[in-house]
Length: 146
Picture 1 (cartoon, rainbow, N blue to C red):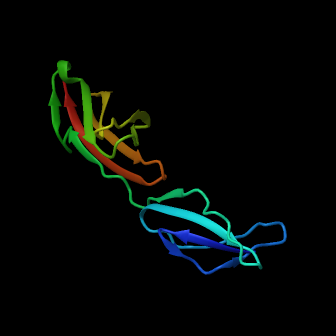
Picture 2: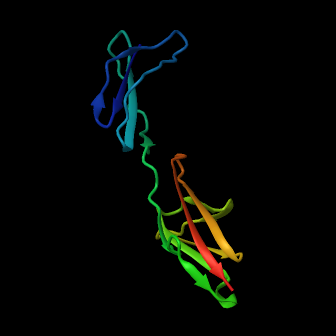
């Protein structure tokens, strides 16, 4: 039988199925959602029904990262400010680590993390990872004075 693969409404060249019915096709996906369906035609010209639609998402873009608090090289003073709430915006639901400590962005993309400052220079490393494994990293430092 010949197998026909349809990607985003475009039919690929027919593929000859193996004796066991298996087949393999290669295609180039577009960024974002791709819809894939298949059908087969035997030597007598009988066609199968269209398969269910498979949605495949291609995501090659790193998630955005906007750190809203603190700002780079900011000086923070006073014991009452030693527990710093770090805040930012990224894509909804992505994994965010601040100096290796895990948090997740909410549905609106906002995230926050409480960080206890040490006197002097404090380095903050942000790593944002989306479901596809794309990563954005940013580092900044703040100065804490008692």
